[in-house]
Length: 301
Image (cartoon, rainbow, N blue to C red; front, side, top):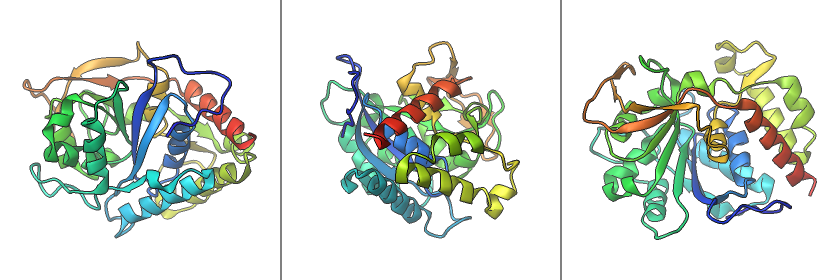
């Protein structure tokens, strides 16, 4: 599905197929990335896969994410058949996939013959990417995986998305598929004040009100209060997955040999692995302003 209600046109050969994989009910920023992806005419959106986020917050986290994806589609009056259910749990080991609608969607899209390249962006754990690869290894050369996750290079360390399925990250890193990684020190650069969101997002009809209100409400949960939030800002840490596809950030990444990820989430060298693209910076103002503009144009159409 392509949303293209703009006066500008995408030049021939610049469009890409996109699948979004999101733990949408985990926090409050996935919703912003979902809207951004759906409103960007560069993307032929092929599906939004609901991801689990462990069982610390909910015993049915994937179902919670799925319901949130449906809510976002309804708010935008987009077709519900864009929503798919992903794995409801992490990999049991590094050889056994967790089969799901989402993993099958990735395989189906990857194996299609198309002039448009396929990108799959992951805003949570890599369970569905690893599962799809274990089910059909041939997809490795037919897509690019973009992941919001992992600790700062070169040492690594604890990071929430990685912690929710270390085995799946290990499978993906040890594979031969192209990977663009946006680690914690980089995705955390997308800082926005609550005042800015109230001024630029909340006035945008029902969709904008929901985006702002659910984020503000989440800031009062015990989980959010236990973090370093001051009450005046939030990190829209999933939005760079969309941003790096809209703007290449050509000089803001390094090619790094894909690491072996240890059980304590540190990085160890593995001479057998291929290089992956690891971002060291994103242009957060470009990402935010592009989102604000598209949201305003959409809600005032």
